[in-house]
Image (tube, rainbow, N blue to C red):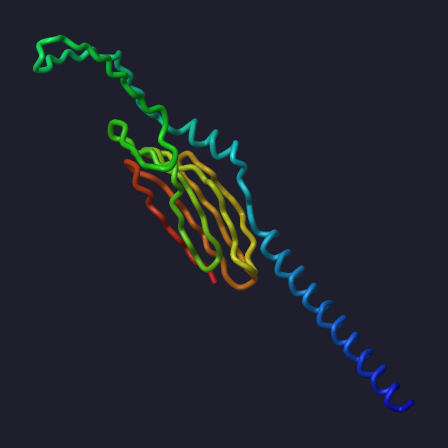
Length: 178
């Protein structure tokens, strides 16, 4: 009987330990998930597309098909029509239009307080996303077109990230306040 009680005691102790471990794990995962979700400032795909469309200029060149005449060795004439191609919009590249640079791939600035992504077209910048680091809150002050400005704050320090553009080149500035 004593052996049976010991086995039951071991099983009960194992069940209590398993439950405690599962509870602690769930609490930790929930806490980390809240920190990750709380700070992200998502930008919808439609908003990104609207920002790119409103600040991008892309030249489209279309030419008519050109007939090409060739004469092979047997002296018959062959005419072939070659279709032209046109480009309407680059999707993940940087192209040049006049003196403006169009960037649909965001450029990033990373700080200990968080990260900021912006796109640039000539002298126009547009915020794509601002994501604070764990323990920081974010405040978006400006989203473009002249400047992007985001502040990441914790209880002890703040980082102000600014982005401005000149001729397609982003000029970053980060100010730190203790």
